[in-house]
Every structure is written in structure tokens, then in C-alpha cells.
Image (tube, rainbow over all chains, first blue to last red; front, side):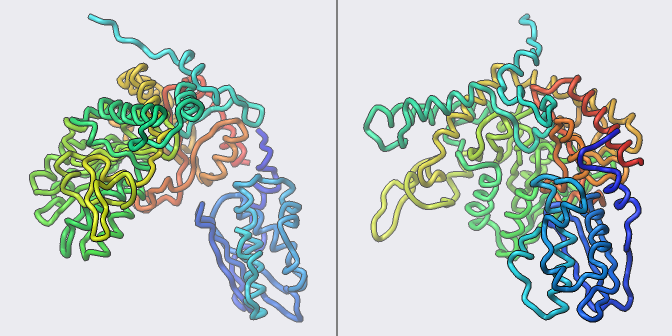
Length: 135
Length: 413
């Protein structure tokens, strides 16, 4: 049984999400949903010296949205806030190892959008149109 | 006795060019008919002939093309009238879709007749298009909206039907067939109760007219709404049926050209039915396409359509029941439903399931199906939905079942 989209790695992150749960002493939290399918992602970040020291996520939704959010938390840990701001769609596609296509890409990008929202909120900066339009 | 014609699916499939298409290198299996149906050559050709041969604006032109276009447009209306057994062609108002037809009633009739403290009765299985216009109206007028709930079988609770329709009820709006559960509602009985209480009765026929015989005079509804694109016709054309006395008593919906008798700086007067409700240049090609779609369905025989879909639905339900972890919503008795089956497979999200099936060339729908109150009632965030039409086969159902098994195994890893 194989699937082009649902590679083992995506299913593994969906079934056993890394960095899932709460970060009680988080410096910033952000949450958003995809109204189209009801996917929800929340990111919680501990930030020190302009870098992400700790990160957790919570959420509900399809395998693509949850797996990509989980993968993203691993990538984000240790990155500077500026590096997070510079991240985009290619980074997420690279993590997933597939292009889920025009309809499902929104599911894949929800985690990135929420991560970026958290960074902008923490920096007290206005969220850019580019970030708003990710999902 | 004339022998009943049975449906020849192989021949019907020949009429639908899109069914030859491959998706992801697999033959397309189109199970998303409750969202929109595919179109036969005769519909595509009718639209093509209009644009190539006699494209003109209708009604006021005194030239050959305008005459031909007007004739074709009005023939389509006559065709629809016969198809749903309306009394007069003037009771058929062309709209953009069922949604616009429902809004037309909520705005034109609703604003003239619904006031503070009045009640509007809907059901929990309505599509958003038969909820939101009434909520907007109720909010504006200080009226209330009540919802008839369903039982475990996915059928309307008769105690609630009787309890909720009271003397303060101005209109009862019920879907003939649910776009999620497939349930066929006893509209005739509900209509009688509505009328006994002095309320009007509206039927959302978007999922029934394409798939089963519908006789608006027998149902005795005051209004009925449906869309052309779900019944082999093009998008952008829909129908509001209204009893003559109801439509005559209503103010216009949209103002503009085509709908006026005279306009002066001091005011305007309206044309007779149905033109009073058809402001602006209508969707001429759409109406002609819908007329051709009705011809197609009448040639096949709407009884045969229903029978074929029941057979496919019975077969699909039987096979789906044996898929491990599959939950099916709605009545299990095929005689009480149309060919719409909503389901969830274990804890696989509906969107993931739709993606896996798409890899096999199978088109199903997933999500809330524009029926969030029903999803809330069923306590599910989303569902997948397979819906059938005249061109679907049992062999396609077999491929669909295999794909469900594949999805189950992928997610069981």
C-alpha cells in the first residue's frame, strides 16, 4: 500500500508528533485555523537572545497540516527570529518531501503561518500581507 | 402494456465526454454529483448552437436572432414547467442557482411578510443556502428561526415537526433530499402541517429534482428551488418555482431592465410573471442548456434515473458496511434516500481520505458540505461524501471500495 502524498515520514509525524503539547513558560503563543477544512494549529515559543529556545505546537486536523507543523517545530528550534521571518513555502515543501498540490498546500502552510504570526507578535511588528496570505 | 425501459449505462456514458478523461493516469470515477453533475454532449451542443447560431438579447428585439433566442429561452421555461409538473410556465422564474432562488423568497416575500415575533421553521439538515438568508431576515425583522432535529436514522423527528410549526410560523423551509444524509423528507406531510397552521411551505429541491420525480402541485409547496448544474445543465442557471398567487403577491427582488412595464421619473410598474423577477439580461445560454438537460433526463426517464441510483446506492452501502472502521451517516434503508452517502473512515481526516482517493482518480467531496449545523449536531468536524448519478456503475463502486481499503491500510501503518 503506497501513496504519493502520504509518505511514511508524514504519517509518522502525524501519528507521533514531535514537540506536541504546551510550553508553560512560553513567551508568545499564536493560533490560527484554515476555515476551509477546519485545521487548527497553535504554536508556543520560548525566545531568548533573538532565538527560539523551545517550541511546542498543538492542533487538530488532517495529516498534512499536523505533520508539517510538527516538522516545522524541529526546524525552527535554535533559529533566529529573522531566519523564521525569511522562511517560506519552499522550506515547508522541503520538509514534507512532496508537493501536495494547489488545494492541499494550504494545509501544509498553516503551521508556518502560525509560527510567523508568533514571531511578529513577539517583535511587536505588523504582520505582513505575505504572511496573511499563506493560508 | 409498454415494457419499462431500463437504463443503458454504457450508452449514457458515451454521451458524457468528460468520462473519457484520465486523472492521475487512472480512469476518472466521478462521485461528486451532489456538488455538480457532468454535462452530456446535448447540453454542451445546445449552448454552442446558441452562441454560434442565434446569439441575441431576448424579449425586446424585433429581429430574427432575437426572436429565435426568445423562443428558445421560453421553450426552456416550458420544459422545466413540465418536468416539475407546475401549473403554468409563468411560475418558473430563472435565477442564477438554488441559492439565489432561496434568497429571492427570503428578500422579496420575507421582507413583506415576516415581522417581530414571527417564526421561521427550518430543519437541522438544511444546506447553508436555506439557513443563512432566513437568519439574515430574522435578525432584521426580530423573528425567530427554529430547527427541526433528526433521529438516529437521520430522519426528521415527527414530534418536532408538529411541535415547532405553530400559529406564529410564517414559513416552513425544508430540503426535499439532504445533501449530506441523503434522506428524502416527507415534504407532502410537512407541507400540509405548515398550511394547516397558516404558514407557507418552501422546498429546497436542489438534491431531488435531478434524481427523482418531483411534482410541485402534488407536494403542494408554495415555493421550490433548484440548480441547473446539478441536473446535467450548465452553471449559472437555477429555478425558483412559485405558485402564481404567491409570486403575484410579492414585490420584485431586483430592479432593472426586463422586469418593468413602464418607468417614469415618478416611479415604475412591473411586468407580469415571471418577468417581474428576472431583472436584467438573463442567462439565456444557461436556460437553453438547462432545457437540453431536462430533455436528456426526460428521454432517460426520471423514474429510471431514480431506480438506477437506488441500485448503485444499495450496492455501495452493502459494500461500504463491510469496510472496517467505516461510519455511514443517514438512513440505511435505500428507499428513504437519494444517492448520497456521507461517511468517515476511522480517524482519517476527510481531506486526507479525499486526497488518497484522488490518487486513484476518484472524485469525492470532503468537509462540512455547507451544512455546519448538521455537522455540529452529528458531532463530527467533517465527513467524506460519495454521490452518484446516471453514469456511475457498480464497477466504479468496486474501485472506490478498494481505494477505501488502501487508505485504511496507509493510515494503519
